[in-house]
Image (cartoon, rainbow, N blue to C red; front, side, top):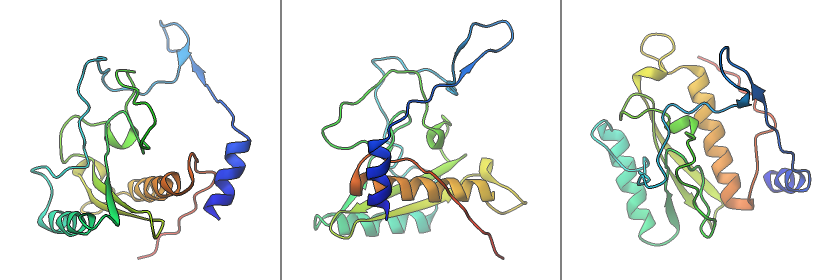
Length: 176
């Protein structure tokens, strides 16, 4: 089904640009950048373990790293300005944009995750640990952040399986 939607979207590409005007500024396209990156700034792979990762997340990461040695699984790099970069596509660096999931400069505050892809199975796995900025009810992850990581994981899996896609509709029903 994902391949069907990807083909449909590929055939009907639409460029959408929303001009905005803030008081006292000139009209520009929406850019929700927190901090601009210089063209020479080195890209950091946020999909690697850091000091804020809990023991369970590290154990799962190590398990999938072991599975990657056989060549079936591949860890997907995750940068603050590039999402789901396919091999062979040119990297655009220094463009002053921030990927939504990687918009915080400090580790452990928001989305801490790593994705692994199995090409033979067309399967994406996301190892995820929400930070305190993603809290909804005290002690629980906000439903919106859970929906975001589900959307990102499904989207990345679709990109690596069939090419460029975007989410047309996402419905989630939360239970206890």
